[in-house]
Length: 294
Image (cartoon, rainbow, N blue to C red; front, side, top):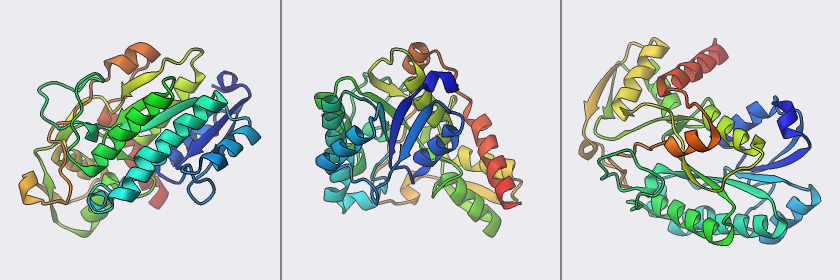
């Protein structure tokens, strides 16, 4: 992989999150590149002047925007902050990238859809977000494409990893503390392992001629949150009964799409990649977490 990254300078924003940390892990094998990992405490991407200065001073070639407001329920009451990070900052990233002539990969979400489709969502299917979070991410996509048509946008879903807070780590904790838990069984999609998505982003950078536009990426296959939880307990060897419940029996502040399976044909075809099955990646993540605590 090293030669493909010869002398590239790569800026990763939101580097303390799940995806940023996953890229940090893989960066060790990208010896030809220099990575600059930043978060809000070191680089505020809402500040166009500071961002442009950072990019110029370090001769950045690619900006991987992993920064996002992801507290889906809190966003319903924190609209201004959510829009500032997921829409306004993304527009700023696009404006700076266009002015400085650098590549951009931005991460979006399956929550831009309403979940009413009868087929896995394609990139050109009409969006219809149900939540402030989904609306802010869609607005960010639109702003970025408007100011920087050369950008690559990847919609992912149900992100998890060894890092930070996520569904897998929550299930592992609850599974070790309780004999029984309830998990929603009427929301369908596919989990995305942050390590797989990070590898996909790096593969795009390494491509001689990256193709701009919107792409979908998540693990291959499909499941419900209930299926996901059952598999986590099984792989981790936890004796915890998972009981299926309906979304209406687990009230949340923000509405979620009932069906958000993503069609990945475009990214597979364009970049000639094979996407791991979601259970294979989950097994790997749990092995890493188990080894870490053994």
